[in-house]
Structures are given as C-alpha cells and as structure tokens.
Length: 99
Figure (cartoon, rainbow, N blue to C red):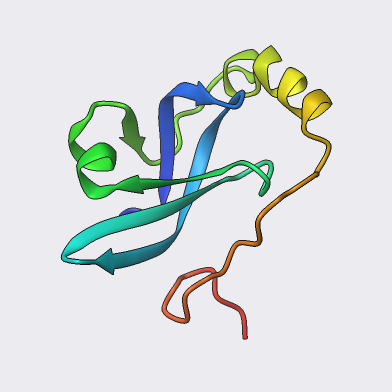
C-alpha cells in the first residue's frame, strides 16, 4: 500500500498525509492517516474511502503553499491549542515504528 497521500480537499486545512497504521477489524481494513505537517491532525479511514472514493491521490502532489496549508488550518489551530489530543499508537509493522 502506498504510504504517502494527498487529499483532494483540505482536512482541517492540510492536504498531505502519511499512512502510519493499517488494521483489520472484523474483516474490514482501516488506515490511520497523519498529516505530514501536524501530527495533531489525523484521521481513520477505510480502504474503500482511500482507494475508490476519488477523495485521495496516491503520493504527494506538489501544491502551492496556499492550497496545501489553508486558512482553515490557521483557524483550526487557534481553536484547538493541543487540548484533548489523543495519542497515536504505531503498530510494530508500521514503516514509522521506531523501537
């Protein structure tokens, strides 16, 4: 599975993400995606959403700064100042696991 992805629309103002975990629950594959620029911005998505929805592009698309880091991000950070951030746990088999 490709590890680097670009969202076709901004997620909390950012568009470049890394797939850090792949999990299987009841036969369904889920992915934990983390923003390249801010680890506080992450999401869990399904295989179907990532591959077939048209919302994601494999790899990183070279975008102008104003398209890759939008005003939405500035607003998000001003409201969410690191409060109530869940920890991200990396699976042992993740490319990003450091023991």
